[in-house]
Length: 68
Image (cartoon, rainbow, N blue to C red):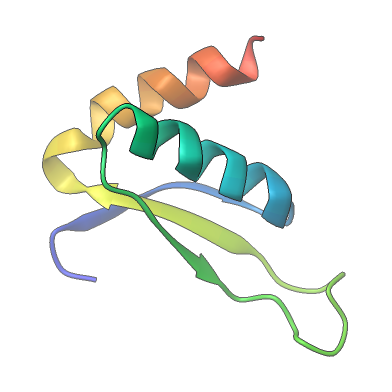
């Protein structure tokens, strides 16, 4: 994914989707890449990516969400 940076990786799909929604509400484009095993959702991870020029802003928002 050229010009995009991974800002978070987790096994929690719901958490990633929540953060993606928060970033989109802040007008930060965000996409997820789901690498979970479709037959067993225990295995694998989900990653959250934002454009390179918005990484610091996105990380600050994610940090603020984590501290709530």
